[in-house]
Length: 140
Ligand SMILES: [Zn+2]
Ligand SMILES: [Zn+2]
Image 1 (tube, rainbow, N blue to C red):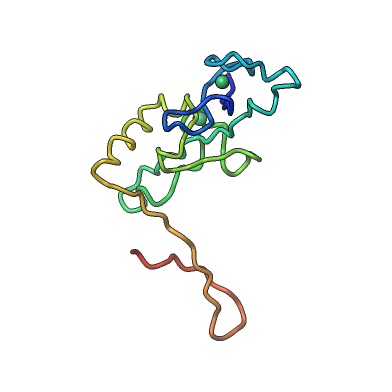
Image 2 (cartoon, rainbow, N blue to C red):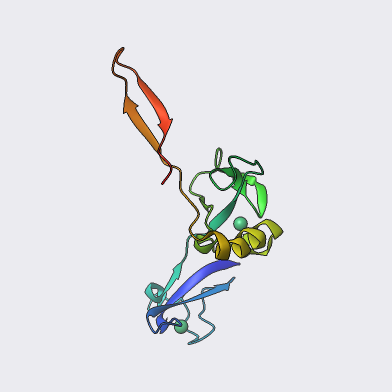
């Protein structure tokens, strides 16, 4: 099953780009066949974004992910190339991640938490010694 988009069909906002999941590059709506060279430009493959669930830790919760896909712990941030992850459920489009209990739990909590904070790492230059040190950014 691939995540695909048909640019010959509008989405729910009326903008070209109807999203669907299928094994075949054929739009279920307008039936355009993306395997036909005349129409292949209309059917594009979407990148899969997996859910990187927050670590189960009272302090780091929501500020760090566990580092692997919720749908498959073999898909790891450390070892997978060209794989996308997000800790924000709204950015996740992997249908298997969206079926997991941890995804549903965090998504349900979005209503009460609002935007999940991002923790950026600020690199500060050392005043002496010429090295660099890493420090977490100030909480907003
Ligand atoms: Zn279509
Ligand atoms: Zn996934």
